Length: 381
Ligand code: HEM
Image 1 (cartoon, rainbow, N blue to C red):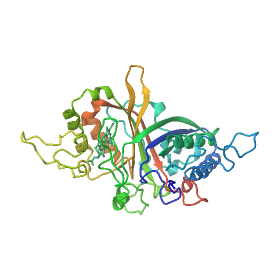
Image 2 (image 1 turned 90 degrees about the vertical axis):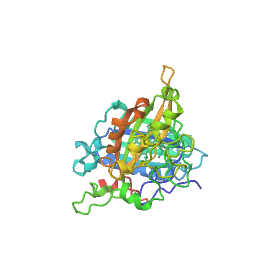
Image 3 (image 1 turned 180 degrees about the vertical axis):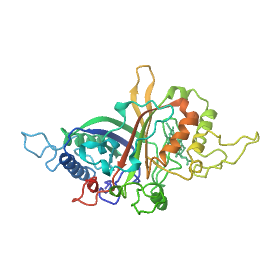
Image 4 (image 1 turned 30 degrees about the vertical axis):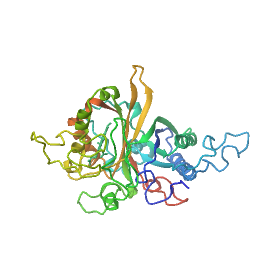
């Protein structure tokens, strides 16, 4: 079957092969009652365990309950398979304010992201106390899952915003072909992948506190085996990009558009050689090329796992596509990994002429649910 296991050491939807469709949602918690929050997380976990295995959200299902009550599943996924559905939960910085007595448990690494040059963030599309990333091969399945979690959460959470994505812009496994983003370039070539098991420990999963003052602890024991999620909704000025020459597009990215090879290399997966110069003495990969600015060698070796999606939210009323990249990255500490890379990009990337960051989110992603007696975030409460 195409069901992804729900129980495990880590949550699914991070390093499991990226599916093609996304429905991402950020919630505000409206109850002030800690017990209600815990109850919600337990109900959500049970529903998620079912839906990811291709079952209905509740035991009675869309049509099996009493006719006098609203069904415990909304029905639009009846007859559809699991479709590789993964549901991944994250806890935002605001969940750790005074409401639920969690302030003392907030990891240092969950401090707000800094403001980056050029940010044009819309508060109503940013932040959130909780988030859920639903990924599936079928958009109906992803939407069904988020809709049912919102239904179950009625009276305890409200939807802050949600985002649909089509077309993954990353591979998270070497078995997957590299997809393309809306700029037409292969995206996800140099990504952390599930086969990189040793690197995942260094760059992806939050490690246990060991007391040593070596900077290797990530801030909170309840998060061991978890990760940090960064979301950035990046609007693309598609029409401007489409009037840019191929040579300029390739120079901006630092790779060819067809093969996806770094300049001076022949094949997509050849390591970029940043030292190579052309006959004019200029570097083949420009100093401000995206892949140079973002490369681990420019940031003391830091890496991240990118798992973003293309989005098109129709047109904007001015005849332009309201489109871009819903950037998603997972890392062990966003302040040490995402932040320095994004700072370099925000300052120097020529791509900035063609993009605008309009939303931002940072979430602590708890470890996996072990079995039916466990629930999302149990170690936190
Ligand atoms: C690489 C596009 C935003 C981090 C790439 C590549 C493309 C690309 C085409 C080369 C292929 C690959 O290795 O995946 C874009 C576009 C963006 C965007 C169109 C915005 C709309 C970002 C952001 C970050 C980021 C916000 C993180 C702060 C990276 C990293 C690499 C990369 C780490 C791999 C560099 C390497 O190791 O060679 N991007 N990117 N990108 N991008 Fe982006």
